[in-house]
Image 1 (tube, rainbow over the protein chains, first blue to last red):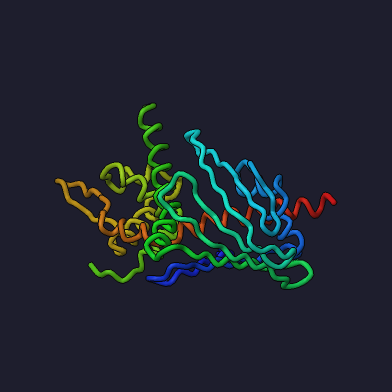
Image 2 (spheres, chains in turn purple, green):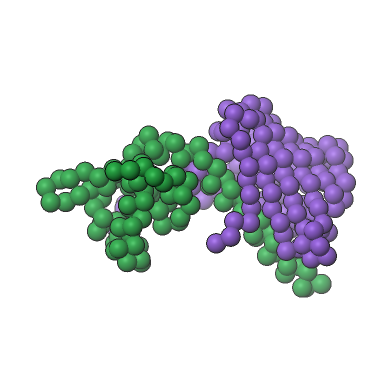
Length: 153
Length: 107
């Protein structure tokens, strides 16, 4: 299977680069980031606040498989339609400091576009911990599932 | 035993990830592991071979049976890898693409 999304993370650095090419015209890709109901669908979350414009802010809440709610929020620092969004992003009730994200939207052809996200973290340690989150979550979710199966035997 | 493979390669495959998850909870024989999958026994043996070569699993002989178990130090090492993070974003972006393609055709 082709790896469409590329993540570039160099050792001992406090940033990462995410790149993805979409089979979508640029304006549709951008729309997925600015319309609350569309954003909710692909991020699998519930939007609480969604003021996507310069000096605006956003907040969303995701419910995990155990029913716990996790809040996320950030502020928009720069907003140029179909071109870029510069924002902060924070995981609420976590030890992780806020991160800075530069999103660049580019047209590749009439039907394709590219998104580059440059994430900047407070330190290389924080970056590595955040990179590990999906791994540990995936593992613990799989373990919980296994536990349920075993308990039902 | 030679360590010729990259652990990144080991966790790139969903079956091998699933084997690791199974073995986090307990040690198992190749036969017991294979029962959890719809793939053939030789395929599972091949996956186990790769995971062992990547230093993520070790084999222990108990009588006639060979049990596989996780090597925690190897697992700790792959915890720093970015593959699950990449996968998370890849899944999200695939969904975004599908939703917007539908959105486009509805217009």
